[in-house]
Image (tube, rainbow, N blue to C red; front, top):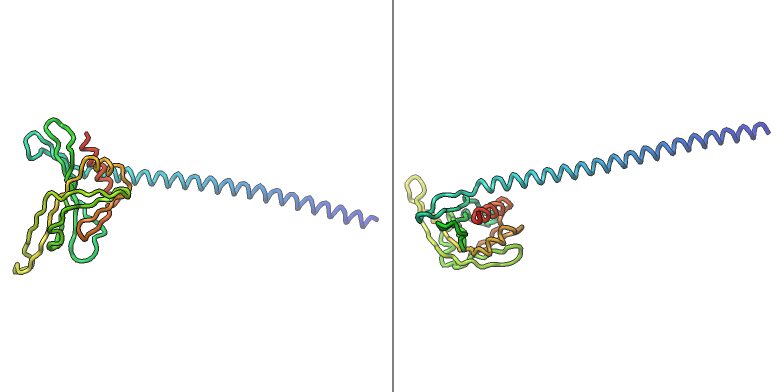
Amino acid sequence: MRSALLVALVALGASAVWAGELEQLRNENAQLRSRVQELERENARLRGDATHGLSAALEQRATAAVAVAPGETPGTTSISTEASRLEGIGGGKSRHWITWRAERTAGGGRPDAAALVIDTSASGSTYRGVSTLRLVVDGTPVDCPVADYRTEIASIGRDGAGRIQSEHLTATVPAAVLDRLAGASDVSGTLGPTTFHLTPEQLAQARAFVQRLGA
């Protein structure tokens, strides 16, 4: 009888210890889950701060890339961006850059359109006869007429025997399209056989350019 009672007491003691350890483990798990959730919230906040910081720096650089100077016509103001190299141009040795340009009148009114200038190097005569630059703004295509085309040939090499031909095209972009560009998240273009995609930096420059036109 005494042995049975002793066994029962030992069993009860072991159960109490096990229950205590189980409760402690549960508390520790709850603390760990709480800590993990806290760390996840902190990581999300840090990612948001980093994204915001990068975006702010991008917009700041884009604003600095827009220049304002006296225009060719007395009393006008010329607004332009720095030349920016286009990416996604496939094949060959040719390189392409874009520049946004516009002139405000003496009264400070906003222009009806802006010029998108594409300068090339070593493109030969790829764009001779091209009459339209197609922009696709957030999935919507817009055709902009080519208003000017020029070409130039430069000598290269020590003896000047080599020749390199470059091209310069200017497309007219209406104000309504500029406003859409200012709020766009995706812009691509097609010029003759060439397609390109504007980078986030180039989109930021376009936004800064449009904002300066409206100032």
